[in-house]
Image 1 (cartoon, rainbow, N blue to C red):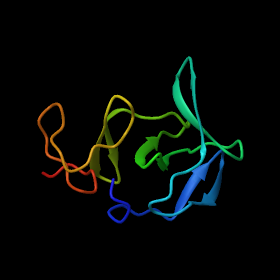
Image 2 (cartoon, rainbow, N blue to C red; image 1 turned 45 degrees about the horizontal axis):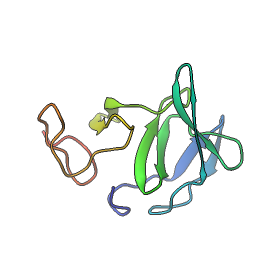
Image 3 (spheres, rainbow, N blue to C red; image 1 turned 180 degrees about the vertical axis):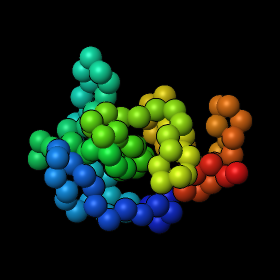
Image 4 (cartoon, rainbow, N blue to C red; image 1 turned 90 degrees about the horizontal axis):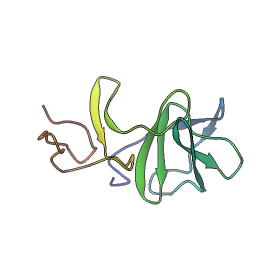
Length: 108
């Protein structure tokens, strides 16, 4: 996703809030898979919860338990599509035929 086309002020991590590293800056950490799915351990040992995280120049969304989401997700009454790797699709057509804008939101 273009770094200037999506903004967030805080990233909820490991039960607390911390400032994000800023648009266009990837968040350092390690992918971890367990019996429930994929999550991302940040370099300080915490993890994103219920928020966006920029990892290797791709946007991912983590649910309220910290797991990476895939498929369609509704955030603040906007629909976004996360591909099978969990990465946000932008400026394209989804596999089921819907158009997404530069911010990744479904264009109705």
